[in-house]
Image 1 (spheres, one colour):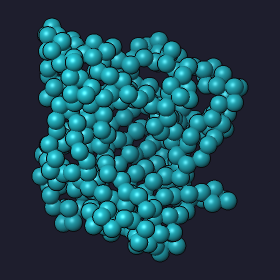
Image 2 (cartoon, rainbow, N blue to C red):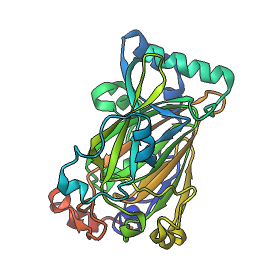
Image 3 (spheres, rainbow, N blue to C red):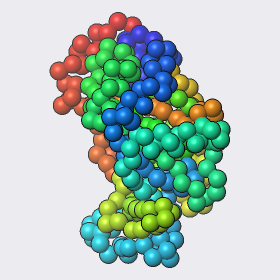
Length: 332
């Protein structure tokens, strides 16, 4: 695909596209080479690991379930102006526990998963480990010399904001949400399947504030429903796209015909426009028991206030106002 075609057919109209072979075979081989990670282990590097249950991340649960478990917080801590805007006040977005772990220790978990050829967590209380939103420039700058952003992003002048590593053990599910950046998601090990829907009518996804609930690990490394936080998520939906409760969320029926699914194998990259809702199911590599991906967040071509289901998108003049004429002249 040419830069001009990507710009006109996908970036401007905000349409996802799969970029085949965007990651080189050399880069794929390098990140799969054990020596890269063993070098980081010898240097005493750490990763920030999120811990969820049975492969599930960022789903929603009833607040009552957390209160019954003795979680701290009862809702009175939320500022009244936010509490009045809660979308589905009976629900909370479940945030995973988190722990700092040496690369050596994480590799041990990877090895055990690979040795059993297991990619599925056993039981709803099984722990799932996932390094997510891990800044490559800040924590693993060596990877920048190995895996590079797809050239087409530079060709059209997208402005890189964040580079993240995603390193999971076993299969995982990231429930539907949106990001405020144009996104290129590139699996390196394992496969990702995304279910997406555009951001033209966010009332269908019940965009709004949803209370956050925080998991933690106890002394025996068991997950606990620890706290109903005095904070909210502004980018999650209360709808489970795999089994939507249309009696509870009838507006989602209007999104069913607009759902778009894409499976992204290692070496390809998927362009996900800013503010597009996406649900991500990651299938770990069966032989390794793990998954690995990078994603690149770019300043969005269009911006939007959020949470605001009715707000329109507007051109991002701050980031691209001086470049739009040159972009428009890109060859087809």
